[in-house]
Length: 396
View 1: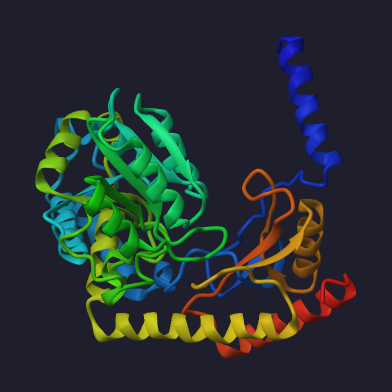
View 2: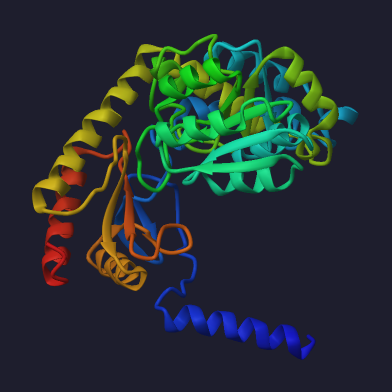
């Protein structure tokens, strides 16, 4: 390896270590669950996006096994050659019903879904307006386009309107992009107000609903449903990797936009399609969400969320502006957040530390996510650990 790269790597890694931010991967030994074995330790798991506990659900497992037996383990090609199977089209029909849109297009991940839709619709002469706390996949997707870009203060509708007012008539198209639920703070974007502003100023709208799908709205269909904006919102990006329990992403949109992405979306054109087992699993998850059993899981998720959030706040922890199962415990400096996470882990609770550049330098935190799979006993035990460690570190 040339010395210049070696020196650079040493500098960067040493800087992380000096800041107390250097980490190694935690290793999950066994299935993802409310309680899990991580790095050889049995812990209560508060860092999973498996909101409804579907990743180990018997119906999803059975669907995956049947698909492997009937269709094999892989699709063998990209969608545009011979990698589109009947089961892929069935999933996309089901997702369109779930999101109440004309069409959907499934991608390899939620991250690639943002690039897949932003690239084909934004060109030189267009403007994209983005919330300052949007997910990295939105930011990177925007960077891959030639559109002009403006950023507005987080969920500040006055700031958004000022950008719309200042730029009115200057661009061929204007697209407003926001997360539905923000992944670090757990707050919900005011899509109702964004829709009103977009209609008034002639802009289009796009939401990344990764942390809202399966969590908010009718049968967990997301923030557009949560606000009753059917027919008033243009593009919904979602994920199959969180509440749905498997992996992948999708764009819910008009049929014309889907057709354009089929020809122009680079993540679609140059990546092999989902294995049949993954696709079948996602269909089974949608079946479950449409049932009373699915609604019961969503109800339990929110019951657990209210109980745990209330417990943290009663202990005196700063949970920020969270409105959802994502509940940060904000402690300040990034190194302190990592120390807090490590001490929680040693005491039997896994809650991952988050620091700059993922969050602001003075907003280091551990991010907790409860699921429908947690029992009340799990959460009470976790709260006891938070109290013990928090007091020992003078955080409360």
